[in-house]
Structure formats: structure tokens, C-alpha cells
Length: 284
Image (cartoon, rainbow, N blue to C red; front, side):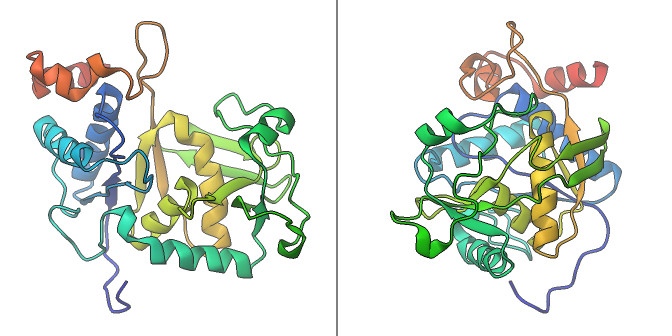
């Protein structure tokens, strides 16, 4: 990133879809909320393509979410299709920034190498927090030095400060409080396939793109606590957060990309209009 860029004043929000499937109704409501909050603040909305996963990210899904978001009525001022001063806006093109952040965490002693497999964690990890689905890391590799690792490094984990309380006021749900080591454990910031993990990438990008408020689903409330710790370790100031209530299917399960019948594409082909969708959200 160029050092002479002027830090923008005012509100900066973002839309951050992943091209791993079709956008569904839950995505649409969250993205519309993000746009409305940016509009109300007369701010800037950034579109970031979170295409880090090399196995699941597909170019056709990038084209699909751009089309679906425009159909919904979303407008962004910066993004992979329109450019902007804080690009590139595809995460797959931003690896040098993530590597620099990892090096800074290494230098500060914030991360350690971990060779635990998913099978290891399934047998030894503690039950996850009720708001999360990630097992709490049992600390198997926490005290090991890199020289003590006999087999290839599996991943790099962030060493959470045990017992530290992470508090923030969410724009929708109000005061939040989580305890490191109790509600969540050491988490992966760099995957064994050489890809930065979600937690690290979004922290780096939100800071680099000068995002002032992150609007996303309530399933990421606990991730916010992790990301606040990463912000502090990297010497960054966290943005504000606004978490939207999750939408569920007829069985009470939160919507996912497997719910093809509730994808924006299916709803659109079925004759639903953006105005009809948005009127339902206004009345909730």
C-alpha cells in the first residue's frame, strides 16, 4: 500500500462476500443493512471479494454475487469491479500484507507453530462456546518451540492471553464480554496450505481499507473478540461492530449456502422483487 495515501474521514463500511456459493436471503439482509448504515452516515461502502479459499472459491460465484447484489439494489464506491485507493479488493491478491502481519506477530511472540490435526483436536479439544462452533484448543503445542516440532508445521496459532476479558459494545446487541482461554482458545491465523486464515485476513484488510464499522451476522460475535485481540497485537485500532440477527429456515437452522431455494438467484427466478424482500426487512 502506498505510504502517501490520505486517510479518509467519515464512515467507511464494507460488503465482504465469499465466492464459495450463491448468496442467500440471510446474506442479502445483512448486506442491505450494511448499505443502509453507510447511506445514513453519508459514508463510503467498500466491496471486498473474500476469495482466499483456493479449493472453494470460484470465478463464477464472483460474477454471481456482483449481479445479485446489484439486483438487490446495493451500490458500492470501491471494489474489484470499480477500483479505489485501497486495492486490490480481491483477498487472493493481498497475500504480501498478510505475510507482513504474520511476521509482526512472530516477532512479538504472539503465535506458535501447531502440528495438531483435526482428529487430534476432536479427541482433545474442549467443547466450543455456545455462540461458536470451534473447539477450544487444548494447548498441545503452545509451549513448544519451532525447533521442537518434529514434523512439518501444520499451522500457526495465535496465543490468546489466558483470562483476559475482551469487551465491546455491539451496535445491535449492546455490551459483549468474552474471556480468552475460557470462551475461546488459541486460534489459527495461518493454515498449513500457506493460506492466511479468515481471522487474520479480515483484521489486516479492515485496517488497511480504513473500515470504521463492520456489519455482519451474529454468528461472528465471538470472532470479533478474537479479532480485537489481533488488532491489539498488531498495534491497530479495532473498528466499531454491528451484528445482525441471523435468519433461519423452517426448522430453525441458520441459513447457509446449501439452502438453494432461498438463494437470491432462486428467489429472483421465482418472481420475487428486491422491493418485496426489503419491505419484509423493514417490517421486522
